[in-house]
Amino acid sequence: MLEYIIIGLLLVVIILLIILATKKNNNTEIIEKLGKFETNITKEIGEFKFTFARDLNGDFEKLSENIERKLSYINDTVNERLDKNFEKSNKTFMNVLERLSKIDEAQKKIDDLSGDIISLQSVLTDKKTRGTFGEVNLEYILNNAFGSSSNGIYKSQYKFENGYIVDALLFAPAPLGTISIDSKFPLENYQRMTDRSKTKEERLMAEKLFVADVKKHINDIKDKYIVPGVTSDEAIMFLPAEAIFAEINAYHPELITYAYNNNVWITGPTTLISTLSTISMIIKNIERDKYAKVIHEELNKLSIEFTRYKDRWDKLSKNIKAVNNSVDEITTTTDKISKRFDSINRVDIKEIETK
Image (cartoon, rainbow, N blue to C red):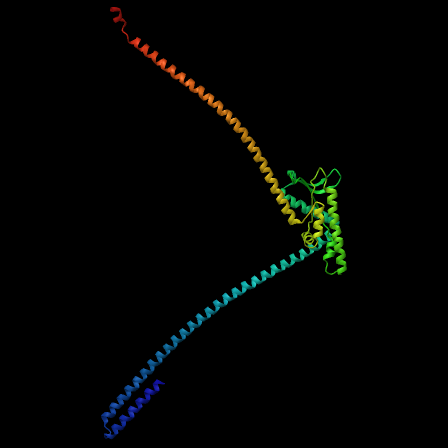
């Protein structure tokens, strides 16, 4: 566009010059100058066109290089971000897969646990199996509280002279004494009593039977395992199910009173652990006090012996002091005798004869 503007201006100048030359009667010199000027102008225009085209091509090449470089940078940046986003998406996807696998494993464990619970329920429906379950739990709690039964603090399945066998007999020190602990598991009527699918009348009937079951267990423990002259006047009834123990304490205070009147203490797993821990501390304190008494007695004996030792040492010290004084006197006498002998040895016998 600039090229055409310049050419137009030059043509205007040439036309003006031609008009001036025409008015001066066609001056030849001016025409020649105009021709030369036109030639120069044409040459300069050609050079300008060449230079302009060259510069324009160079600018286009630089612009193209810049555009290509920018496009390459943008392409690399986009690819890098796509790779990072893909990597993050892949990690997220892998985490999701891992969590899903953990959820599947947890679901399998829940299914297995449900099966175990069902099998446990089927096991606990048998009275003998329930008894074994309570005995094992009781043994486990006693073992945790006192260690092995071989230490003599308690014995499992102890048989009295009356022929009855208690689940555990605890040999606690006075004033506690020997305490019987027996496991009881009144489950059937408890399950019926708490089953909401049954009618209210059925649940009330089951509740009455449950209370009767617990009272029967209390009577059995009182009659069989509180043995005069062998055990203390009290015994412990262990309920291996915490829910049953909570049910009795929350809704059946009459059973607590009935047990108290018959010298039977009702415990669940938690309360039995607390009770045995307290007894264990009492035993340790009694043992510590016993050894402290022994140490005190031995210290008294040692004090007597030390008094005798002091008396004897004082006598020996006096004798040693007397002997030491005698030794000093003998030493003095010895020194005097030695000086006499020295004086005698220094006397000149010839001088004595002359005189």
